[in-house]
Amino acid sequence: MKRGAKAKESVVRTYAAPPRGFDASKASERTRLRYGIPPRPREAPLQQYFDRVLSAPLTVVVPKFRRQPGVAGPLDLPLAPALPPQRHNHMGGATVTAPAAQGTMRWIQGTWTLPHIYQAPVDANAQGCSTWMGLFGESSTSNLFAGWDIRVARSGAQLQYSYGVWWQWSPGSRHAVTNLPAEPGDVLSCVICLDLGSHVRARLYFHNLTRRTVSTFFVTAPSGTELTADTAGWAVGNMIIDFDGPFVARFGAYYFDECNAGTTDSPVIHHPEQPVFLTNLDGTQDQAIPSILSDTMVRIAYAGP
Image (cartoon, rainbow, N blue to C red; front, side, top):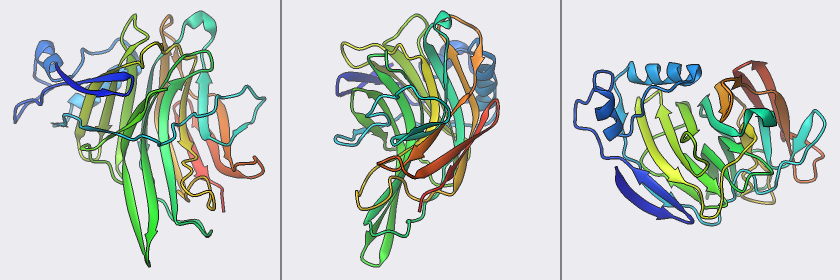
């Protein structure tokens, strides 16, 4: 393992690239570990993900990062307890909270088709949509997220789009993964998993199933914090770019599948239970409406102007 760039209050560690023609499905566990591919996990959903990843040829990308100072994180405000249905002006989607007897949230998994966006009919120069999943909680001193953003901005008569994968261990900065391709319409799968027995060290996996590219790396918590989250979530974020416009660009609808999460002290697999509606700034209008379609699937539909 080689040491990567130091993030704000965090440290990222990446792995060397495997040789050309490397076949992870035939390599020994020790060889796979050398290139950042972990041992087969103990949790059934993660085992299924692991087996599927190794079943097809992969391009392993050694990630490159760019800090994004000043970019708001998914939960700049804490999630306040509320009776169903929950409504918040910073996230919409679905969450699950683990009982205290099961320990804290240790891992989360999700797969989603990356949405395209269209400008809402308002006077705004730029709009965006942030799709993400993560582990968080009011009692935790840090929260860990992974996601994908898309933005559209006017340049004269033209619309210019930008998009990309990112991660954030808050209160540290957000970081873009600059060399992992992920475009609208691609199917992106992600796993966030704390090391066994640790609240400060986690591995992140990004897998673009459409392009068969995968990237994995370790990250440590911002100094002085631990991840002792009680909640896992799959969501769309407000991504305020222009206060004259909507919180989120028109994205139609997209689906989170393989919505699984697990805790430190229990083999129970958790799935989305609580829908959370994304509203505008003053809470008077829904911007995104979630629907929990099955144990492992959530639909998030745009409902703004």
